[in-house]
Image (cartoon, rainbow, N blue to C red; front, side, top):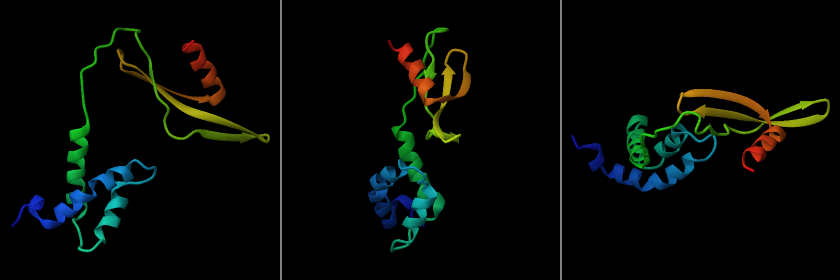
Length: 128
């Protein structure tokens, strides 16, 4: 039996890696969806697990890690999660952001849903 990485179809899959990586950055695109498209290209390709394994290896090779030392009260890390939420009431649209934050030293996580206006005011005061 020939190892998978020596098969001709592995070379064909490897040539698709840049296109696959670019596609995975788009919203609502999954490995399963890309695999279904790949699977039916002639000649028939790998099953799902052998398709995902080299992609995982490429992802792991690109990730970096480090040990970060934090002083208490030194920083608050914030991020925005997903698309804005829109609430409509009394013919008025209000946009909200999901606003997760982390206190790195304590490992505490907080999640807020904040209107975009309030968030703008908060950030403008923090970064004066």
